[in-house]
Amino acid sequence: YAVGRGASPSSSQRQTVDDRIIILGAGLQGAALAYYLTLRGAKPIIVEREKVAAAASGKGGGFLARNWGNTITRQLHTVSFQLHEELAQTLDIKSYRKLPVLSVQPGDRKPWTNNLCPWLDGDIADSSLMDADGGAQVSPFELCTKLMNAAVGRGARQLGGRVEDGLVRGVAEEGAQE
Image 1 (cartoon, rainbow, N blue to C red):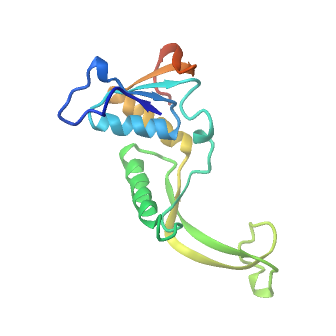
Image 2 (cartoon, rainbow, N blue to C red):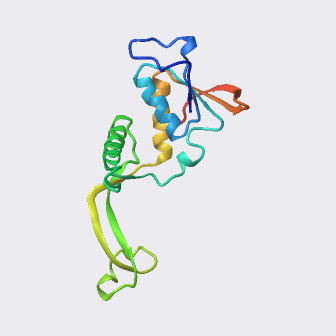
Image 3 (spheres, rainbow, N blue to C red):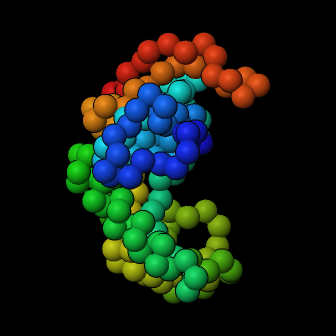
């Protein structure tokens, strides 16, 4: 969550003490928000209870899909896929890799499907290549850490602390991690 006073500053405004942006949590959303705000000249404060990507954001599979959405979400998938590729290059994310996407249909194996996807447990009736380069994978922990390091490098501050009863408590200065 981002907490600020009034509307976010335009590119022509300078951030003042009264316009501080506080982001609660250094998971994927908090780290990305901090990174993109610093690209616009803001210097947010990120308050994190444990460490960057300490919970779900650091433990997911990191699968990225370009064409898995329906007509309503397809544009979002396409833009997001391109954005992750750009971030991988810009932030030197080593774990990013493109990979083919395989569609697998469950069911009884047939003689001709015995050698299809031998690494899958269970029976498969059929499989097909959805898109040779329509998928990618990235380590979510590395992505979050690189986003936070870049944000801190551009003037954001990471503080240790927690929120209780709507107030930030136990704040201590920290830095992004490796």
